[in-house]
Each structure stands twice: as C-alpha cells, then as structure tokens.
Image 1 (cartoon, rainbow, N blue to C red):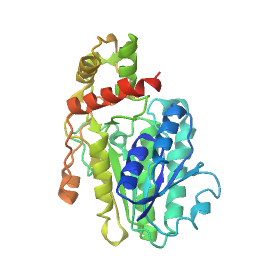
Image 2: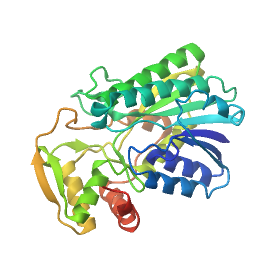
Image 3: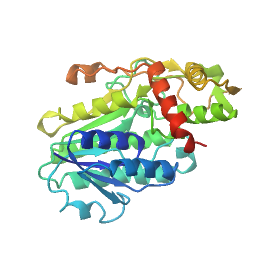
Image 4: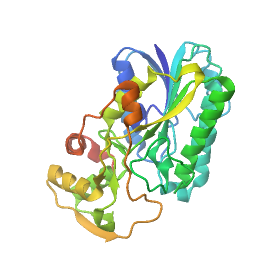
Length: 325
C-alpha cells in the first residue's frame, strides 16, 4: 500500500514512516526540514529512512504553491495520508504566531485540498494535540468536552485544523481522523520538549526550571504506543466519509517532578533546580480519556513512564546527547 507522510523527518513522522517501511509499505515522504530545532537530528532521521526500499523523499514546504500538486502523478496510488507536519511549540507560538497560522492552518488546508483529489484515498489521519483542551478543568479530557478556550496560539491553530477537517468531510465526503496526542516522548524526540531538554541540562550540570514545585502533571505517552495507535486507527476510517477526533494518551498523569526523578535515576546525575511560578500558557494538568479509542480498535498503551524514560535515556546517552541544547 502507498502512503503519503507529511513531516516524515519530524519526531512522530519519522517513527510512523519507519514502521510503514518495515512492514513493506511504500511511503512518499515530504518535509521542509525547518530549523525550529536541530536539522542535524532531522537529517539523521532522514538518513535512517533512506536505508529502506519503498521510500521516496521530497524536500519542500506543503504551503509552497504547486508543491503538493506536483506529487499528484507520483501519488495516484496513495490510499492513505498521515499528515504529521506542523509547527510545534506552545511558547514559541507567542513569539511568532504567523508561523503557526501558515503551517498549522493554511498547511492543513493545503493537505485537505490535495487529499480530496486522490481517487483511491481511503483515510486521512492527521495530528492534532491535547493542547486544544486549553483551559478546561474537567478531568480526564474527553473528546466530547467543549474546546473553545485555547490557552495558546498553538492550541488555537490545532483546533482550527480540526474544524477545517470536519468541514471538508461534510462538503467532500473525505474520511478523516484527528489524533489529539498527549505529550509524546521517546528516542529521536524533539530536543525542545521538557524531558529531552531536562536530560541535556542534568547531564551537563546546568540548571533546569520547575514550575510550581514540579507539581504540574502530564499524560506522558511513549512513542511506540503512539505509532501502534496511529497505524491501527488507519484501518478503521469513519463510515460514509465522516470525520472524528480521538485522544491518544497514557491515561495516567505523572508529575513533572517525578519525570525529573526518573531522569536523575537513569542518568545517574542530580538535577540543579530553579523553582518558578507556572506561566499561564502552561496547562496545570493533562489527562487523556482513552475509552473511545479503546472501544474502537482495542488499543491500550503498554509503556509506563519509568520504562519509557529508561529507553529514552539509553538512546540519549548513546546518540541523543549530540542534538540537545
């Protein structure tokens, strides 16, 4: 089967693309290789993917006029799209909001316009985010909860993408599933994320910042569990060209303080900590209600935070320490 994967050199995109190639699928991968974080790391991911037969890579921005359209001939056999390209970074969205509108709103619509022209397309699966739950206080977060109070420009841009998908489903009968990821972590991850930047600082004796005494909690979800969910969801498109959103989380919030404890343990280093008040763009607690995806495909996460962080640290000490900072 042939798939298009946008953002194939990103964290989740790399792991999804690799899993597809390992099982023998053909993948058309696109990525603009932007410099939001280490292009060296993105290059290493790309190099790994190019070792597999069946992988075709096209460097470019999905917003560039004619870029996706130029893949139509190559992509006539595309049966599935995993749209994982995005501009990430909650705090960065306050510095450059236009980058998020371009990548996460306009870029999303570009993909939808491309997808509706594919005659053999069976399912479009795209990345949303737990950030869309914004200032909601009811826990755990359920797909049925209102999501009209985003706490960041990033969250707003992701919710806009969801709304665009529901519109294209209604107008064009385009079957789609948006996945609201909850704090995905693991090897080959993003150096700007807390678990990675903390590891890099702790290993070098630099100071890390913990908000509210390390009490804020996240529903940390290991990358292998996420990939398993993504690939299995593809096989269950919404009926009659419908659209939906699903939570992908570990269903077990853990404090950031506990994350630091695990990093100290596996790195065998003591963290130097500065305690500060939590900024309002940082949500106090996330927790995924995963009953819907569990009932749909029987998916349940397998990795605890302890197991996942141990695997991440093993990779970090072997390879990942080159890309932090």
